[in-house]
Length: 435
Image (cartoon, rainbow, N blue to C red; front, side, top):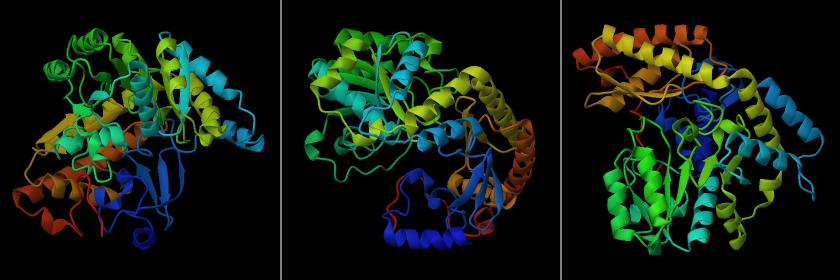
């Protein structure tokens, strides 16, 4: 397999083998995952051996919501490239995009840009600290790789384990940041209030996803908003994952809870690097009190891709399709599990669905699932991120394969033979240092 051969070379030259932890083959199917693609179109991906797969997993780690190589977005980007993607002058599209984002989110008046979700959240945190002249951050959920976030694991090594990815190491994060980022769990307003009681006059911001795996309990988001207001902390909604999937805009619009700052990435530009930080004028102006600046935040492709992507969302009501396809997949998981008496937990909003095998050897079972689905022509793990390119035909083929594989897994569990069916090592969970 050419992909695995290239990955062996990559680990010699690239620490960890990949630029993104979530794309490591060891997280999917060690020694067997295709690892690299030659081309991608719609919901399909071709590996370096020319084999085609239907991507029923992460769709570019949630970035390609319209599907791979969307023709409308690509057309706009190609035009921008031909007209020059960089200049000494600024591109006019950045103003147009700021106006569009603020029109969609009437509570916001200003925008700043970055090119990745993690750096955009860090920009938001910097702005909040500049505005409040305070240091500490209360947060829940996953918010990237930057020092402000990983500092939580300086206080206790497992502080981030309940926030999407366990085992994240804070090596290289200055120890003086210990105690500056404090986690609480989603729907646990009591935990947030305890943080506030202990750090009332030091809290710069509350950073959280408005939703991810679970719906907010009645009143939860409203209480978080009130806590932020009472403590004069900035409420930052990280919409990098949920944004533009349930509606055309931030998911927080559905709950009518207004933050001080909202952050977008992934879905806003369909695979082209782009991220946005929007907020109220009084808060965003604090960006001028700090140094927040980067050459490539001014290139043209990102804003052009975002404009084309968002306009397609508006024109095609993409979110309706994402919810519909996501529900079909989750219903398919549930039905297949029931037919084969498998104990499977299903969670996540329809466009970002997940399932778990609720058994002691769940990692081995998940590895077997990925192995068997790959042999049937699917990139698959225990998650499905819906795209506009996914059609019912894709889902029907996928669920048929899921049913077959769930049946195989059920028999293997009954005979205590899951590990014996694996053709390679068990997949990793979370952060592992690779040799």
